[in-house]
Amino acid sequence: MRKSIGLCVLCLAALSAALGAPSLTKAGEPIKVGAIFAVTGGASFLGGPESKTVEMLVEDINAKGGVLGSPLKLIIRDSEGSPEKATAFAKQLIEEDKVVAIVGPSTSGESLQIKGLCQKAETPLLSCAAAEAIVSPVLPYVFKTPQSDSFAAERICARLKDLKLAKIGIVSANDGFGKAGRGQLQKAAPGAGLEIVADEVYEKDATDLTAVLTKLKAAGAQAVVNWSVVPAQSIIAKNIRQIGFNVPLFQSHGFGNIKYVEAAGAAAEGIVFPCGRLLVADSLPDNHPQKALLVAYKQAYEKRFGEAASTFGGHAYDAIILLVEALKKAGAAERAKVREALENLKGIVGTAGIFNFSPAEHNGLTSDAFEMLTVKDGKFVLCGK
Image 1 (cartoon, helix red, strand yellow):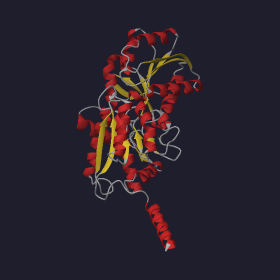
Image 2 (cartoon, rainbow, N blue to C red):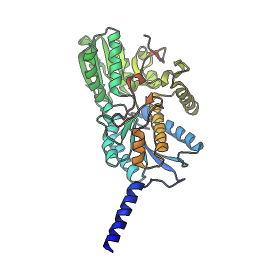
Image 3 (tube, rainbow, N blue to C red):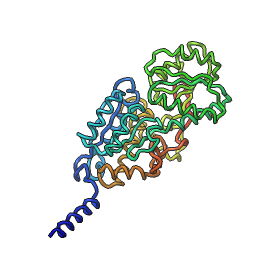
Image 4 (cartoon, helix red, strand yellow):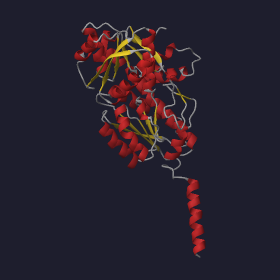
């Protein structure tokens, strides 16, 4: 009798292993997707377009039949850019709402704060923030859609080298994005033959950077590289001109929203930065593999919301299409299967580039995903060679 019971237990264990973890949804029931964005607050220029984009995209997906025969149920939480709020919302989405995955957060600081939590809870995270530290070292459940800051730093330094500007000054915000970018610039500059003659850090919510820029001017910097998000990106453009510091101003890939140009006004003219191709989609050749998707997203977003599309909304767009592809590949709304499917996606065309993930690569993009852009007559255009 005991032998029979033991055999039954072994059979049940084998059956459970074969079936895997239960799906989070039953056939036909909504598939819950969590999203954490800075919809309001200082980082709303990032989170606002992201939130609008995912709402628009999920509506379209559901109108076409959903995924795996089920509609997507989007649960958006506004973190206001706060790592503490992002952490609380991540726990809620994982434990109470039982989402299959989380899209976002908007900022690097928030993403770095919650990535360990998502890993521990074995819930896929598709961050919409850029810091390479989000996916390096690789955690099995953590992915990100924006191009990496190391590639941005390399492209900036290469452009500076081409322009024969050897002495540079770095300024960066003291947040997660700024700290990560500063570190990447420090690594990339020597290889491009650049000397960092000044390296200053400022408060992320600073409203006047005159003193910081005066130090760079005194140090003899031939160009300034700023790594931050709002409000400093626009402030630094104004301050550098106000003190008569007439050198080229480079920004990070966090500058990819025309609202930053509008906020800086005439001072934005000539700013150079690396960015994905969404902002110059119409300038791409018709046979470019990203053009059709970029133009379609840009037109849909601008018609729906009456404002210019930004690269940040594009990062959220990519997160959703990658998640949908992973759900299809997994065949079930099960976190572990979705994670495995994500890790093996290849050739997925997105707004940021063409994604090729692997167990060792959870961003899936290369430096070729960037173009160098500049501001001309208040608009974004491709840099001349």
